[in-house]
Image: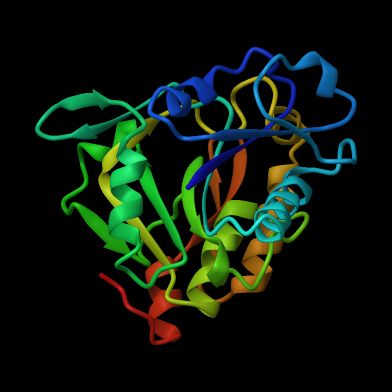
Length: 241
């Protein structure tokens, strides 16, 4: 297992240290225009600038396959810490991913993830299958991935739906959490995309592709896609639990 961190506009990222301290190797994937600005270990140039998150995620998938890496954590560059909810919010180190890997090797799913810190306490079950999206930090069984990320989509959500369509789907550890800013709110990363309302276009595309299991809803001043992930999985006769 290895951790891939795509990073843009956050030269002071410290997320890699969470993994390094428990012996998990990290590789950073960086645009050529920022490559020399980053003073982080294990840098890989993604060869193109300003191509978007789909491009870098597909680059990482291809890199993993070329380097025969079977299990890869893909983690955002602004994760602050990990932990569990065991009656209280308890911080843990990144060795939680070693435990997750050991469990994942015994299961048939393609993508494994954890919860946001603010939602872990309210989860009624310790895990869920094909019922809830996973993003920010996920473990991927590279050998089972026969699809990629589509440009202009809500990439992580579309990737999860493709996992359900093309494989066994997604497994979420509901009581294990990551502490990170809401997507698009932290400067760098997808911040400019959200500021320019690119997420609205992506939501509309996602709804068109996955109708009738998706619809547009308003969240404050934002347009969001609401996906009936459970209904979609059931329509494909996939496990839902």
